Length: 113
Image (tube, rainbow, N blue to C red; front, side, top):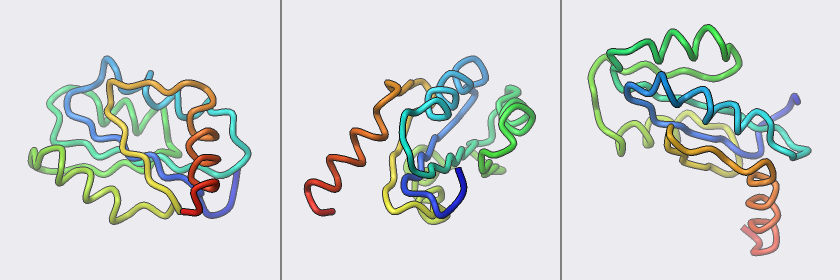
């Protein structure tokens, strides 16, 4: 889906090569009718996380850190680059229900945010 993203999903990653694909896939299969962007901040992983994301998910914006800056800094860096109206910070070991982004978006609209 093209256009400015409505939701930016920001995933902090460190050595998550065994779990990051499940997390990203759960975002890609969302049942929503609006654009979503995915950002992954890799915190100087020593496994093949960055290679996996770059190879298998070319539409994911991958931010590579040269040093392990920690979860909070990683999230702040992604939020600074995110283009969505709404931000979802997601751990790399989490997987979304298929309607999660639609439900979150609908709730935000109801609350007028």
